[in-house]
Length: 383
Image (cartoon, rainbow, N blue to C red; front, side):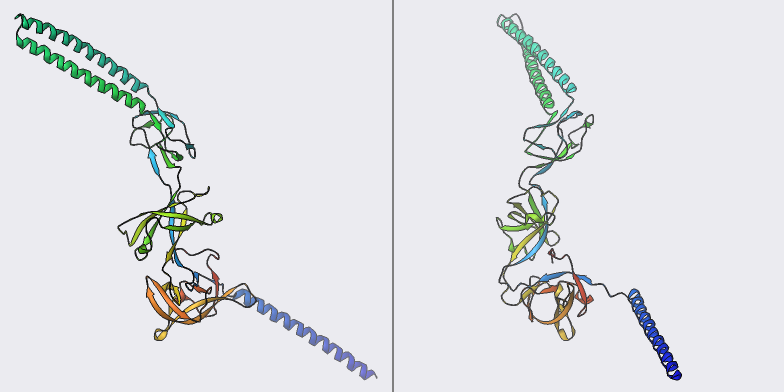
């Protein structure tokens, strides 16, 4: 009996030691796993540009990047020189056409006007005196009491006096204009976008005092590649989106100007927004949706999305969701190239409308690689 108790006790101790050893081994494995994960974290998902396939049942389009610009903008300066006496508007103020925006000190111009008037009065007096002399010598000549040469001299004096009057009148008109030009008036209804002058500053016709923009529907300016310019014409209506103001959605714009000469492979196009909600300002980026001719059959993609393998085999990377996760991975699909036109490739394969493909950078990617979508919900401009 004693031997049995001793054996049971020894067996129990042996079991406890084994269990403790198993627990220690599990903890060591867990620690090793945690250390390995800390030292070798899983690779981060690579961010890729992407596109969504459209089979042409809707019109195809390209997104072109443009910029909002004012319908009219200019720098205003005085036509006269002098010291600024008043500034009546400031940055951001709205004004009406003809409103006085600033005023120069008029003292010098008022003195010049007085001087011109005095010169005019003197010239008139000289002319009147010369006229009397001419009449007097005309009577003397008729009475043979004076020579015709003397009469000619007084007639010349009269003519010179009359010219002096004309010159003095011109000086008066100039002094009045300079006096008027001491006021800077608005050429149109608009808003002050920059104030460049201050009270007490010396102004001249070459020194701008304000930069202003007209209160009118803004324009959108963009450069259209030469291979797409044939898709644009005057009075064409296009849709515009302002990324900085997504709440406005898509706005309608009318094409008003198309340049006839390309610069660096692109033509300048201007269009006028048909409505301009408050919040749209000059300098903002605009996305212009340019419709393209419909592709019949297949899918139209940019060449950058088409991969090339061995034996002239082509493929694309489709972006799919990993099962039971919100992350994405790549799936390589073989495709057939149907045609290449206007820098667009038409392909066929196991593809469906709405599939998401990698837009560019396929040479740095591998099948089943984890990826993240660049700017999810934001469309890529100028693919």
